[in-house]
Length: 180
Length: 364
Image (cartoon, each protein chain N blue to C red):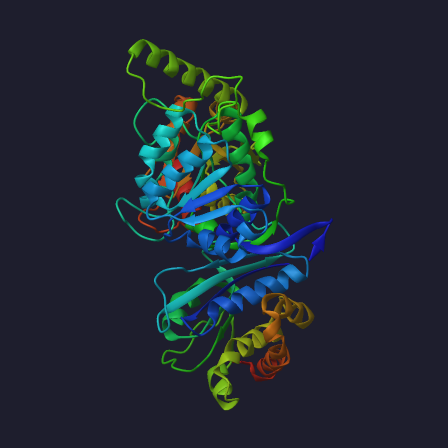
């Protein structure tokens, strides 16, 4: 198994940390992982992306031209990365602010309205965990068990009380995602 | 997380440098923040090694100050290093030349970004010439190691110190923004104690660490006004470089034996090119990857041997064509050598390198 994933959205949405949690989850399951961020002068409101590769075998390039899975959380990201999904691959998008909807029919397209859901839950911070839950539903790159271990490892101990809330958001995402 | 009694963790390349330096018993770090390598000094500040191993961490007022602090610390036989990115390393060249001339063994890490000048903060490999041709004034070389993974970022810190002290010569880890910023699994080295003063006295009899009664004062200088003596010193340096060329070449080969074509690449470009090799092989093309790990000394003879009977070579770099010159010198016309590179902070993707291989080398 080898999954090449791009996660892209606005800076401040938790794009980079979502990728990091995914990479850590892979580590917890003894897989090979790489996490490569864009590190330009991005800040809140700008665009940010990261490439995450989770594999059972040695990983060559951390930088890719085609992806198995693209998670796009704003229009510029959708426009940029939709053409780069491999035929038969997966595109996951949040329809918030999306004017031009995904147009390819040789890939599986999933919608997850995590932005609205996070607002409904009155907790914008769990947005990225909802999206991550959606990903794990349609393609279990890592297990929820691995994810829980990763949160334990990455969050400082004083924030461990937040783990149940985050895992709840993952479940919400699993229920929320739908094929388009 | 435990694996084979070794701790496996996920770190950025920059963070790995900081962890590895502390663990390999470094005595001091002097540096000035610059993107894309500021995580090194940030991580050192977070880990506070001065409270554990006693390692000193100083944010100097500039890169020029940093390298001269390295000059002083290493002159006392200490394991001392500095880290920066391209424009900062340009500022350090005078200090590095002085260290080479005085035979002082410091370590410099360059996490390259695009140039010239202040350039960009995005990754590049355009300091290859500067790193492998000395970089400052005079006839000298710096031992240059090019890591292509976070693991090698960690492993090469101790190796760079070892080589620097073995040959009393500056050593450089030439990385870039890709390897510095990416996170990967890494097994950190075991914690080694810092050397004691007695050990330093024994291992570095040249160190300016306080004269004992039984010997003359040690003087470390690159200045000598009598040309006869200066020429003798230069000849000594050249003999040392010949030994390093003979003994310290490091490289890696992947699928080279049966290959019709070779890609030659170092550092992050070698990781990208490895994927290009996989893509080309999946199309039925026999492509291998030759990766110089020491850029100086360059694996000249080894590459020449490996290239025998091949149909063509593509040198893939994130620059306008620098290592390709060393490849052409090594191959000496025996096999066609072409270059592909992206500039100004654009990192090539694996597909682009495959296309360059097909159009420039395979002539499809």
